[in-house]
Length: 208
Image (tube, rainbow, N blue to C red; front, side):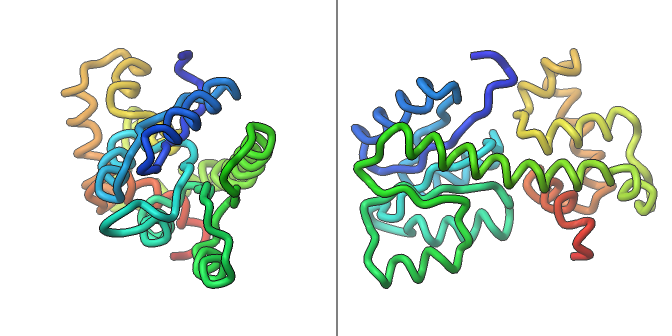
């Protein structure tokens, strides 16, 4: 798929449903990532790819469930997620509501409802993200050691969801060079990974 295609991470423990969601995303013009069948595998993929949005089931079998993952996403990644689930009882809805999802689609889903939910989630999320990116220069002036021009470019690309491999391809350098730049960028921002860097950018204007 073209590099600028938006990517959705599928978090679902049923392999057949994963395939259906993947085909649906491709038909809608998105690139499916994953699938992740557990919270742990989802977190690993989030750290590597930082997708544009997440389709999240609530029941992921044994271990942590989708609601617990949603809380982690809110705290560490601040990415839009849409619950795609068969559960709609009052207790589940109360628990889900507290996580502030970007959307809620019931199974069995249809392509039109999923399309509308994704478009609305992306519109709301990236409208806010663009506002924060406009203030990167202001954030940079407040750092003890300002970012270089290349580091600023990489930070903008990180916030748009590009993986390390895509960063290397976009900036015409090796992955090892990217890793070196990112290490320096993280040190200057006083963060330890890309998720924390994006969170710092998105929270800057909120005074967090």
